[in-house]
Structures are given as structure tokens and as C-alpha cells.
Length: 315
Image 1 (spheres, helix red, strand yellow):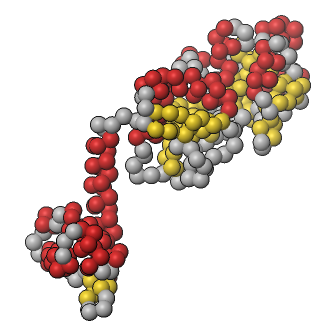
Image 2 (cartoon, helix red, strand yellow; image 1 turned 90 degrees about the vertical axis):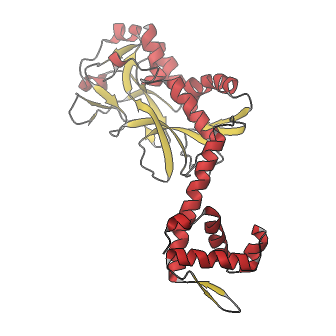
Image 3 (cartoon, helix red, strand yellow; image 1 turned 60 degrees about the vertical axis):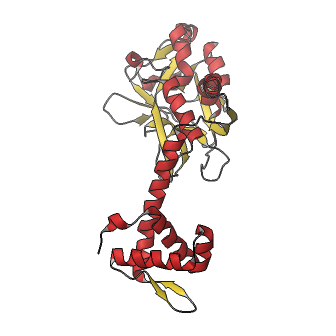
């Protein structure tokens, strides 16, 4: 055995071609060499490996068990080299063509859309299609290259780049608190006017806990239920009642003083699992340049910590 250093990528490609076609002549035509040269390459590969890779007779070429085993390694080696070549080549290129983005409706409107102008300014050859829905999107089936989603990441069939964690705050307008008082404990919420978001799975549950404790669901009787977050936000700003909303939606109002955080000693949520803000894309070994460019752009745009989060205000 002469050692695997004698094996080159062309020999591996020829071997894979013979394995798939089970025909020397067909591979020879594709490679621009003679069938005898293909046969010689296979013989040299067998000598190097010390294994017979094919059974040969006048009518057929059939892979041996060793050939079936080795083809997986051959595909991996040629694939890795091709991926390395493509990665290095793409470093010389600029993102171009169409990139399709999908995002939740309100998060997309408030935090993805404002970054698009800088994205296309940075990459002038890039054009963008942006669709927005709160429904579940399968990156393997939907026409989307990058999908912004908020939730618990459990599906290993896609890659995810996590930007950060979503936090919930209970808040109300100063006018509401003047007229109805400020609750000191979640037990008191049943006596307050609550504005509740209803998604596809029903009204949000309002969960609270003291740091380090278990989550407790506090039942509230809504004064207003809506599937439109902006409607609830406008109602809260007008002094109608309390809302439980994510930081990215409510922090503007908290910073201007139009809203006041309520029960700041308690952590709030609508789900007991951490909710991550992430970009997901199909589980490919080599994500396209456009996908990487979009994700890298929003990593910079959102920042760390996320630009809408004031570290001092987090639970």
C-alpha cells in the first residue's frame, strides 16, 4: 500500500463516476480521456487502498462491498474540497440577485424593514422580496431564503442564528394608573382592565414569577381582545388598560414615558420556555452568500445587546 497521499481528487471523481454509472466508457467521455485510462486510474486506486473496488466482466462493472464503503468517504472528501473552493471563491464576490426574506408581521415592520435600506446600500446588486406572516414557515418548503422567527428553537432540520432573547413587560399609560391604581402583585390583575392579544392558538396566557421561582399563570378577564398588536398598543397608550407585550414592541413607549412598566419586581411571559429571536434557513452544508450577507447585516444592525433592550430594564 502506497499511502492515501497518492490519491488525488481527480481519481476520486473518476471513481465516483464509475460507481454511479457502472461504465468506464461513459466516464471516459465525460472526463475527455480513454476508457483504458479510466481503468488504469481505478487499478491505481485499488492498489493504493489495498482493496478491490469493483467486480469486472465483459458485461458489467459492479461495486464490491469495499467500493460501496469507500464511495461515502470519496463523496465527503470531494464535497469538502468543493465547499472550501466555493467558500474561498465567494469571498471575492458580492451578494447579488434576489434574496427572499420572511418575517413576523409586527417584528418585521418595526425591526427588519428599517434595516433594508442599509442592506441594499451595502450590496447594490442585491434585490429583496420581503413577505410577512406570523404563521409557521418551513424553510425547506417555502420560497424563503432567510426567515426571521421568534420562539423556542427545537427543530434540528434547519440552521438558526440567534440574535438574542425576547423579554415581556407588563405596562400601562400613566393616565390609566392614575385612575385605577398600580397593581403591586399579579393577584390584583383580576381586578384590572386587561388588553389581551389573541394569536392563532388563542388568547395569550399571562405568566409571572419572582426571579428564580416557578412560572404562575394568572387568569385575567380581558376588557379588549385583539389579534392586532398595534390596536392593543394604541388602546394602551390611550389609557384603556394594561398590556403584556415583548420588549421590541413596547420599549419605545417605555422610553418616552407614554407607558410605565408595571410589576417590575416580577418576570413576565406568555410561555414558560425562553423565546429566541433568530434567523433560520435550510440546513445546507454551505449557506448561500446572500443568506450569510443578510444574517451578518442584521447581527450588526440589532447589536449586542439588542438595540431595543436596555440592560438595566431586563428581568
